[in-house]
Image (cartoon, rainbow, N blue to C red):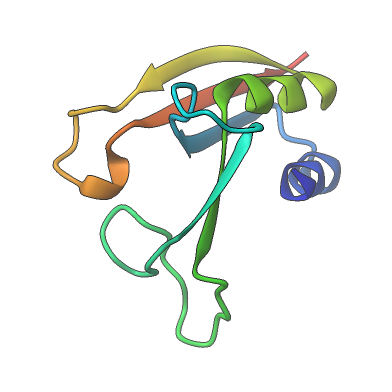
Length: 101
């Protein structure tokens, strides 16, 4: 969540697009951690000298929407990827578009 705060406070965007794994059917407190391999199709792409944790942090859509509302943004569009891409890392992914209020 701190990264969202940094993005909003340092860049003052009008539109923010966020991709996340769809977790609403997972019993969780709102977030889930997991390992992620860098530089494969569908995952984060890093430069050779970039240090990576190799860990992804995923939030439920309701927690993400609440965080963005608290940062002064409203949801404009949400779309589920599901089977739109033939990539295992994009299964059960959502993309959200938020607009500054």
